[in-house]
Amino acid sequence: MTYQGVLTKMETEFSQPIQYYLVFENDFLSMNQLLDKTITIQFVKYQCLNCSLDKPIYRQGFCKSCFFDIPQAADWIMRPELSTAHLDQEDRDLEYEKKVQLQPHVVYLANSSSVKVGVTRKSQIPTRWIDQGAHEAIEIVEVPNRYLAGITEVALKDYVSDKTNWRTMLKNEVVDENLVEWREKLKQYIPKEALDYFIQNNTETNLEFPVLQYPVKPKSLNLDKTPTYKGVLKGIKGQYLIFEDQTVFNIRGSEGYVVGIDIE
Image (cartoon, rainbow, N blue to C red; front, side, top):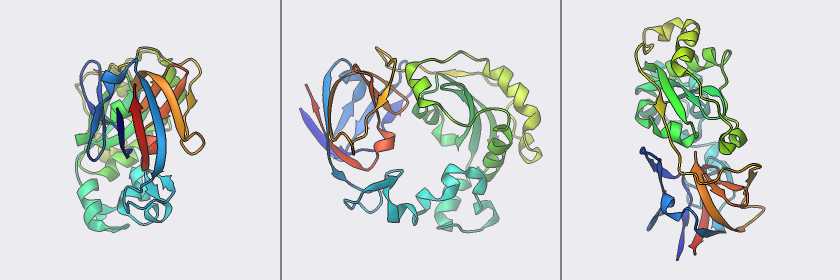
């Protein structure tokens, strides 16, 4: 059976293991049910997630002109410390910025390839951890806006990473860490503006991913270079599909690509 649509990040359901769904405009695929099946992915065209035009994707699923114009791709998305809505200052669209920035945000520790610090809206827990392929995570600070979360992350990343090594994550070369101990160790470095929001008593969340076989030497599928790919699906972790031949496909990194998917 063949399905076609524009790629957006897989929807997820927190269970043991995580359930994944690839959602198109008129169809959706329960990806867990496709494990051990042969899948063909065929690049069809581009479709910017903002303007819907067939223009090369620049970043985050957007064409270049949209990326530098729309509020959904502004610098504060990747660098929360640049948020200014709490000051009533506009970057690209103050109404949108207030809606996103002026809501509860969480600073967390997650273990995907090693312990890292990150920021997300409270409403995105545990989705954010799933998308990063973390097998364990814990909230350490819950603040009322994105700016406070951002400055906390900046302060803590002097002492803990803020990046995930995707290859290590996919190979499952991860060591269990005591995130409660990490939380207590890092408390002293939290900025005073955010210290009152420190979470004293919580425990790790553990996540299990639907993977039958981890890759030893993962190689990334790039649809611009390889517009047609066929392989046996062996696992899903983070936003990656893992295939039997060591190929891995980053769905989120391919947002805005229209593909045909054939299942044998």
